[in-house]
Length: 374
Ligand code: TYM
Image (cartoon, rainbow, N blue to C red; front, side, top):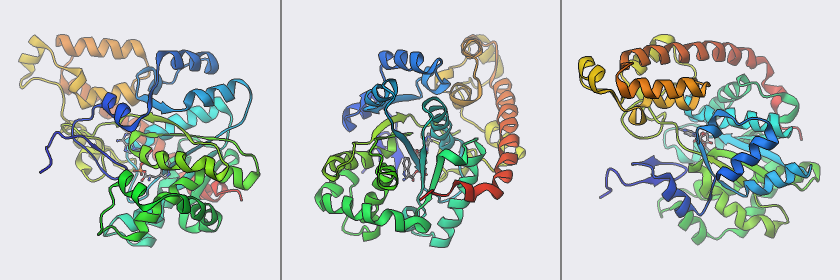
């Protein structure tokens, strides 16, 4: 029987209390050290909120990417989405960060929309459904302000002709026993799913294939995607390419008690297409670090670090470090109570979504400009 608190982090399941230090050890990644932060500050002139607040916490070979940047050598960015429904605010985190890196690094982005993955993995989803979600989810990416000239969205099913030769080359170098050890495949796993990791590896090498410029990729994503890069890193050099580098973020929590924001729990999840009323209701029901009564909270204070509402200010909706420190203190000393924070967060989220939803609709006419340039 699985212990409720047992930590499980795979590309398909994230459960239990997440110990990020332990993940660094178990996955064999490197911590994002103060030294690397200082280097970025020097290279970029500022540090994104997601770096300052340590939402990004781990990496593989990010130092080598900074070396290349400092020497004026090339590299490209790669990230993606498994389109099985609407995008939530957690998904936006690595994309917002990718946009920041793209602006700092002035480089191309390859974004993989994996309608094939979601079709083989999700029992109930039809292929035309995942493909349709792919185009819908692309609107969220474009709404964040990416530019068509240096952004390539790969829609797997549409673009498979550009991917298949590389996928075969990767697949031939990965044994079933390695794939089983990394991903936990069972006898009952369908063979589409077993081949799938070869396809997620392809965009690590697609820039080299399409342009002849053999440069590494840097992949910003949450740490759940790391197992893919373990196998990709093993085969990269055998195929004559660079190992892909990564920078990993933590999971934005859901609005319930514990766990990451996940579309499988829609009431604890803020989707980019939610209405102001839905946002208000979800935030109003959020798990906080508050006390049972306002009177008690005014007297003894709350705990911002177990509070989901506080995490949203920290990771996404309060840019000003002084205001975050003040909110932290006010919460601990009973200067603010949960109703105040919930009302403020609702206002911030709805302001963000109003703007995002408009840009999302405007993006409908532009999707084709973001197609893979091949
Ligand atoms: P998917 O659709 O599960 O997730 C898309 C991106 O969102 C990240 N993510 C989160 N980040 C912060 N907080 C959360 N609560 C949260 N939930 C998800 C994921 O780590 C991911 O970066 N197989 C992939 C699609 C893919 C991909 C890639 C992702 C293909 N190539 C390269 C990243 C990089 C998937 O199903 O992602």
